[in-house]
Image 1 (spheres, helix red, strand yellow):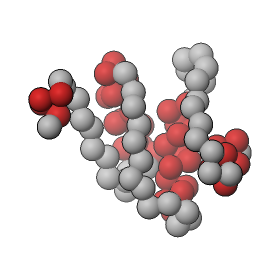
Image 2 (cartoon, rainbow, N blue to C red):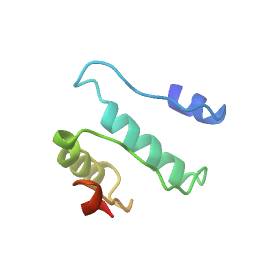
Image 3 (tube, rainbow, N blue to C red):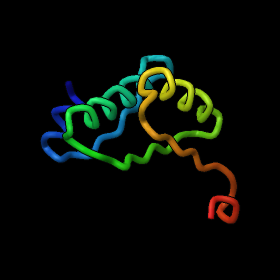
Length: 80
């Protein structure tokens, strides 16, 4: 609800708390809802530590399989 409320106010937010409390899934489901309800077409940018990229990809596949996800990793030259 807080993410939706902040979105309706056009307020940027950061989710930050202890690990394991569901921020990844909350974020994915929120973005999926924005797409499904026609409130935003994206694109969306998620910045995450390299150690968690595989988890993000897996959760997107499970919770939002119809979303197109692109992962950029590597140094500046490799990403370009």
